[in-house]
Length: 244
View 1 (cartoon, rainbow, N blue to C red):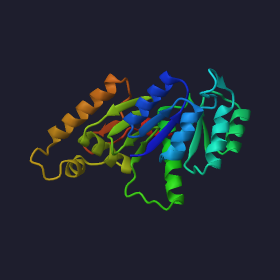
View 2 (view 1 turned 90 degrees about the vertical axis):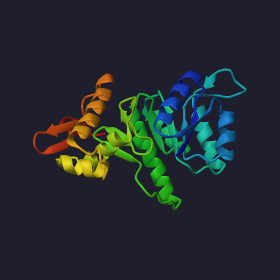
View 3 (view 1 turned 90 degrees about the horizontal axis):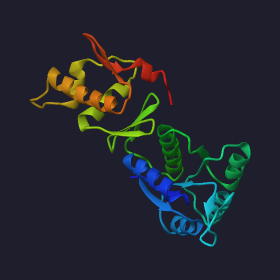
């Protein structure tokens, strides 16, 4: 499980983002001040750090513009090498260049969708692991158009929503995502998902897909699986057309 240090002095916003990222399989610790962030980042091991541009110091009751870049400089000077991503509402070349020049690896606006934020977090963590000589056994995140499937937690990320899937629902999505343009025959899906189980049948597959589609409908999400009559199933073209 990857760990994130979230540095933001807005407690309500931090708690909401913490819950969202935890839904997607991250362990998230929150630091509400510069001093707390300095202590935790240098004493504990994290895979990435998200830092707000405006941060409050324990010696000041109000956040100060640019304190986030000061924190980044201090963390880099103290030997912190993990990816640091500036995460802010401030949109502009000055803020972005200041953050990157301070040592941040990326600059992400808080208006960014959750799938895009997750994609960039995972990309930076993977890159850092390669640099450090770490090798992952499996790829955890599977892209499905502009959506994403977390294989370990079985969470389907759609915009800002986290939809929990069953083992079979997640496995079906994995199979279809392996070759998005291919129509996968029903029997092939049954063999991969049910194996030698006695309950393997077309009606069992139909039941899983029906419940999966009900979950999407409840969240007002467009169906991502297309039934090609007489041939099998594939990812819906309308979903694949909207790439991340």
